[in-house]
Every structure is written in C-alpha cells, then in structure tokens.
Length: 187
Image 1 (cartoon, one colour):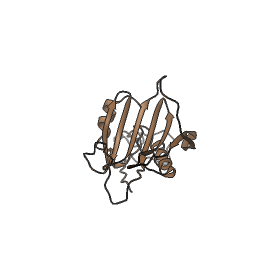
Image 2 (cartoon, rainbow, N blue to C red; image 1 turned 180 degrees about the vertical axis):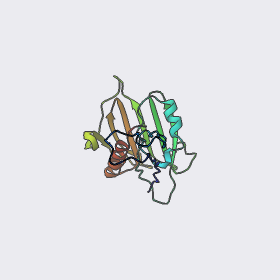
Image 3 (tube, rainbow, N blue to C red; image 1 turned 120 degrees about the vertical axis):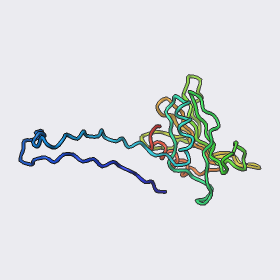
Image 4 (tube, rainbow, N blue to C red; image 1 turned 135 degrees about the vertical axis):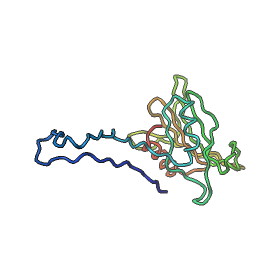
C-alpha cells in the first residue's frame, strides 16, 4: 500500500547573507512574504475508512482510532468499512466484503470499535499481549462451530476501550492491526 503525500512549497524573499540575523528589511522593494504556518501531518487511515470518517467524527465525542493495517481475506478482495453504530460515547464498524454488509457471517470478516470506559465497564479478559506505547492488549481467540466468531484484541487507552476483531484471526495479525491504529493516532 502506498500513499501520495503532497506538501506545499513556499518561498521567502531573498536575504542578504552579509546582514545581521533578523535583519529582513535589506531590500524594501521586495514585499515581505508571510510565512505559512507549519502544515500538520495528520495521520492517514486506511483508505477504506475515508468515506465514513466524517460521519464518525461528527457523531462521536471519543477519540477515534482506526487501523492503517487491515488483515483481509486476500489482497485482491475489496474491503469495506461500514458503520454499525455511532453515538457520542461509541462507534462500531463492520469490515465487510460487500459495501452493504450488515454483519452477516457470509460478508463480514472483522470489526473495529471504540467505547468510552465507564465505572460499569467490565474488566478486560483474555491473554495479555504487549502492544506499542507500553499498552497491554488482551487477545481472545475465536470460537468455531458451523461458523467462526471473531478473534479480538482489546485495550484501554485515554479513557476509551478499543477493539479490533478478525474472523478466526491470528494473534500476530491482530497485534499488527492494533499497533497500526495506535501509531496512526486519533482522528
């Protein structure tokens, strides 16, 4: 996956290398060019989130973490992020194989969610796994019968409980997915 990064070029007026530092009025015929403020390098989520990110940002009040790395069924199958729920205190997204997936096992292969931690939030369960930035994640393996549930990686960060899930996912893929969300920062 590659991203195109665009940056703005600015020019400043020529300066006299012999003038003292800070002396910018060496040539009054050249108008002063205002310097552009530094452009912040906002993290870029995985492109599958771009169509729904504005709605999530508008409707939730919690910090949004979205993974850059998405483990999918294969590299050729398109993946869609679909909003299942978004409120001021939570968001739940489906990672689907079709743009209209409503969570059915045939079209859904994963989830991404965040929810504000409250006094009634249950304790985290699962196998403790070290994530980036000193965060401990908790891995829960999938349960398989006629279909497989999601394997999940759950962690608490900045008052929010985040969870990434992949249908019958491997721990290493969920660690990579979680770490890519942590590295991308909040939206």
